[in-house]
Structure formats: C-alpha cells, structure tokens
Image (cartoon, rainbow, N blue to C red; front, side, top):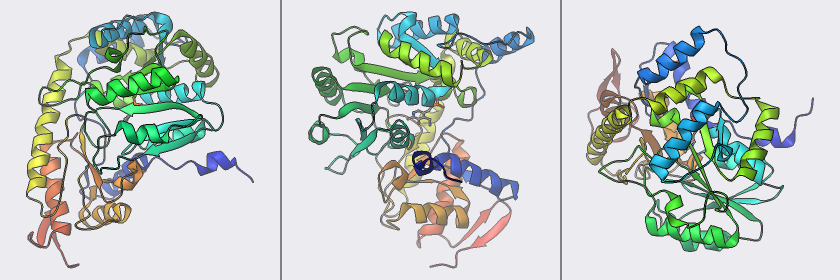
Length: 405
Ligand code: PMP
C-alpha cells in the first residue's frame, strides 16, 4: 500500500505525543508531573458552561453557518473592537475548530505550491508542518544574536520573490517573550510595502505579566482591514482555559474569509454550534476570569523563576507572557530530545525538547499547572541532573536513589 509522500512526511505533534506518553505512564500508576502541557487547570467559565448546557438542552444541535454562528461572530467583532480598536464586519470573521484550524485554513487559502512562509525560531511546533501540508516551504529565521527576539535584519535577509507570509506569535510559545513595538512596526511596514501577509497568532495576547500589554499589529498600519496585510488569529483556548472546546477564529479581509469559508465548508461544514455557544458565553460573560487566570499564571511564573535560579548552570529568560519558559540546559546536555526522554524515564517529568521548536539545547517547561507541579517538577529535574542536589528523592510514595552520576 502506498501513501502520500507529503502526508507521510508530516511529523507527529511532539506535544500531543508527549501528552499521550504521560497519560500511559499515569495509567501504569507512575506519579507523572506534566511540565509539557499547554493548558491551564481552571474550570471553563460558568457563563460558557451555562450557555452550552442551555443550548444542549434544546436538543436542537444542527449545522451552523460555515463561518460561525452570527451571535458568536458579533461577540468576536465586539472583542476585536475592544481589544484591537478595530472595527470589522461579519464578513471579516471566520470561526474555526481552534486557532490551529484557523492558521491552517489561512495558509491553505493564501499559499501556492512552493510559496515561502517565514517562521521565527523559536517557533510553535505546528507552523512548519502546516506550511508543508499546504505545499508551501517553511523558511526558519533564527536570531543571529542568540536571543529569543527576532531581528528585522535577519528576517529581511531571508525574504525572496517567493515569500508569501510571515507568522508572528507574540507573546511567544515557547520562549514567553513579547516582541518589541519597534520590531513590529518595522515588520508591518515591510509586509505592507512588499505585499507579504503577516499572520498574527495572538492566542496568548492577554496572558501577559508585570503590567505589559503587547501592542496589536493593527496599531502600526493606517490601512483598514480590507487593505492591510495583517491577519489576526485568536481563540478561547488559552484566554479562558477552554482548550477542549476547540473554538478559534481569524479576522482578515473579505476575500480571504470568503475563500477560507469555502475551504472550511468542504472540510468540516462548521464547528459544533454547541461549542460555539460556549465560546460566546465566555466572550460575553464576566471577564474577571481572564484576569484571575493571568494572575495565577504570573504567580506560577515567579515560582518557576525562583526554582530555576537555584539550579546550577541553568540560564532562563524571564517570560513576559504565555505559560512557558525555555531554559538553556546545555550545561547538562545539548541533545534536548535525549534530555527530555531521560527526565521522563528517570524523574517522570514531562518536558518538551527545544529541538522541536527549532532551538537545540533548551527544554520548554510549562507553568500552566499548579505551584506544586512547578516546585516538585523542578526538584525532580534537579535531582536527576545536578550532582549538588541530594541523591535521594520521593517520587509519589517511592524512594528513588540517583545512581547514574
Ligand atoms: N498557536 C499557538 C502559538 C499555540 O501555542 C496554540 C496551542 N498550543 C495554538 C495556536 C492552537 O490553539 P487552539 O487550541 O485554539 O487550536
């Protein structure tokens, strides 16, 4: 049996693979700590649950329009106005099964075979694979100064006549940094002059710390939504901790949204109206839940930084947003895949290898879970790697002795 060469070349999502490995270990009774996961532990907002429950109880769960329920689109339009100071029409909005599907559908809509898409390392694991799935070519730009902040010069150097788009994710998964205004302004200007689409993955835009507020890319253009090259992606997954509801959206010009809608109509018809109603409930309900989540995550970030500070040889850039950090573990091991595997097998801690994000020698650690997960997870990693740490530890109710140093 032969398979598509392209489909066969697409890598499994490493984060999803690690989730599955953790689940299997837990099923075996191991006390796994998941510092790999990208989802907060909060309950979904009550307004989302009640809205969905009330919709479900009607028993009338039928197809919705492909581009989303008009009432949800209305809530997204209001969200765009309030948070981006941008007035858009229903024809500029499409609801998808998560921000992930929005990004894929955008790429499918704008790319011709061999078109290039600039991706800034460290990057979210799915971008390169999604570009390849649309017959495009991912072009990775790595900051030459070794920081997590992309530099305009490095990007400009990678632009060719085939460059169709650039994907920007700030606050950034996996580094947690927020890109500067000067950088964004330069990219917006460059993209508008060159006719390159700028896909803003804003999924973490409210999960920001220390009073920081990322400036929306729209602020740097004078063009309206029909004429700008900026496309904005967002969703309820990270904002409200509603990862399993699978509702995201894109805001773009009418032509892009029309083609995305046709594509989506052939692939999924629509996202579940029951879940769209939940997203609407979250967007129109009490917004203090977002601030509470942000404060809890910021506290977790502080705990994570404190724990890492006492870890000999580990360097870590302090995250300004998201729920991830990307410490440099090269003092212990440069091969991040082998290191992550070692930590899972020996210490039952899930981490994600930096290699998957285009940055070797680092591990992505999530602080989306509890403070206990963070402190215990880092204590276990220290025990497994740092010869200065005590060589005995309890993992669950098992006393473990380090015998590999
Ligand atoms: N973009 C980034 C940068 C992400 O980290 C994620 C989720 N891990 C997504 C998009 C996808 O979000 P959703 O769950 O809404 O598909």
